[in-house]
Length: 233
Image 1 (cartoon, rainbow, N blue to C red):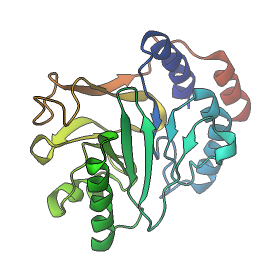
Image 2: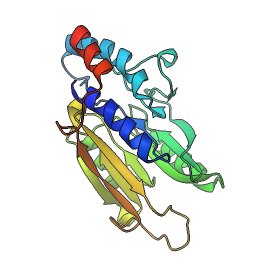
Image 3: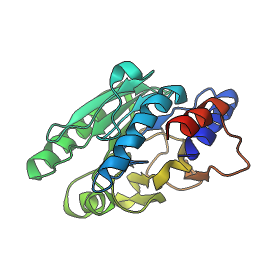
């Protein structure tokens, strides 16, 4: 949980340097729904106190990491078991469209997901289409191998290994997954957007940069959040 205190300090540093930075909370960073129910419950109570202080721009929680919207300072979009949800947000260079994959996927669900992606692509307001998943690494990989699935970016989550980033779909989709326990931050820097002149596919270090920043001792602790962890954890 100590990664949260360093994360808060790191976020403040980034906000002071880059006004265009956009912060997204994805699913399953700290809890693992398949085990440790009692431990997850304790973590969730602590996260409810801390997450509003991190000032995310968007939050995509999956139970048991779900904080009610009235406790958050950002827009919160919980995942659904069967329903495909969508959201939009201004990211500074236009609007991004977010497609939340349901927790239970079948052929019909995949069709609805791809339709939502295509609807966003047809919108003149949307400059970037992102899918957000809590399915886990194995199921996310199947999206590319077994289905027509083509968001610009897939923000993965759930069981399985973290991933610094991988370009899939012949350059159409960047897939990134967070590492567990919250002691690192995944980042994406987009230099050219799909649809802009000259853009054909994602090319690392040319039109996009991505990776992971470990939250180690060189990043200071936020004292208020560290106090919450010490007292409540």
